[in-house]
Image (cartoon, rainbow, N blue to C red; front, side, top):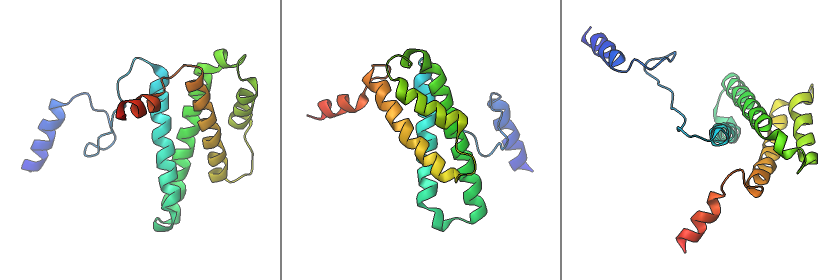
Length: 151
């Protein structure tokens, strides 16, 4: 009983939490003024989780694996759609071929295909799209700064 009272006091102290499970709090995304950074943070997180689940697929049950991979695939699709919609107006004149390829994959898709292969194709396209954003100066290229600081 004292454990329940302690948990209630902890919840009262942190009234901002609105999660499904009070014991497992969500990890908040970093606060940033740039929406592109927020989208990319979420996108990179979901891609990393997707690859981790595909790498360790032999160690998970089939049902758990399918549910987790489908959730990650849908999250990647959502985040990439948000990234495209936030940068489409500027990129349509610079890289129309890449934008057309991305829209075709995102909004038309390949019906009847394996969603793992579909997501892997999407991840390759996301990588190209992120390189294009770095190249055009929408995002700072932190990799170059880190390499120069180490010298």
